[in-house]
Image: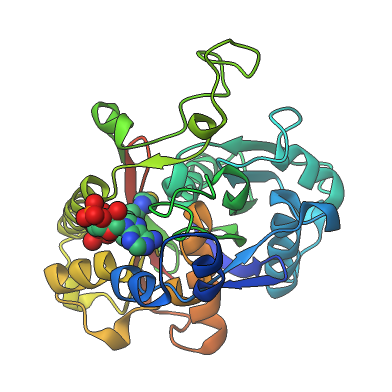
Length: 330
Ligand code: COA
């Protein structure tokens, strides 16, 4: 018997506070105009830890919305994977804590770290578990509280990112027509230094004499990331389509990692994607790392921009560097 994974529910979850570009003008040498024109970002959501808003709470909201859409309970879930670089704690994992909250007592659960590519990596892993027969129902989440790892004095990074989560429920099917058709995940550690958090872990722990708070936050060489993101997302998407004997114009809908509107525009131009065939929300949420794609899929589905039965290609890129694509028939 051959098994495949079908997307049966999606959901999103965000903290309440909306932070505008104008608010950055108060604390940094920047402007709404610069941020809008260079990135497309207008607002982002920022968590209030004291109100209990964390990666776990965003994940729980997204998961419950997806479970409601799928018509399942926690008891139905066999596997929970959360792609995140901002877990509530290292141990137990955020996925372990979510398992308890959802009453998903039969499931196994773990966090997966692949920066902004965390959701596509998680989808790929969950799909493999389902194909192999071990899992019938998987909850795959991309969730971040990036505000906790920003250097709020660095205008080159902190204006770009935001908090939130997206979730997808995958269920085993024997119908290959409506399923995750193929995924590709990649990494190239040679470019690790262009997007990194150096201090705060084993090499320079917080108790080390040389530990620096600013180096325990995100540092980025934006222009290098920009070029690699466009090239790698497009090459991976094209290779995946080639492997399925498909041309870009045979795909109904494209979801690109929402990091920067100009990166998305360049990917669309390279692959020949018209504006009506994609979803943009980088203006509202900024870059929410692993959360951007499942949130985009959830919003596009709920708004009717993409419909059950359509062919969707998603592409992502992140620190590591990591990148990947997934082709899904909804
Ligand atoms: N406000 C005003 N000026 C800013 C600024 C801000 N928030 N951030 C940077 N600048 C300045 C820089 O200091 C630089 O000034 P200088 O020329 O005097 O040195 C100038 O703007 C141009 O910087 P540059 O980095 O060349 O701009 P850019 O057009 O490449 O845009 C990014 C910068 C970060 C928006 C862009 O490189 C980018 O989006 N890269 C990808 C980031 C990303 O996607 N990261 C996550 C990957 S998953």
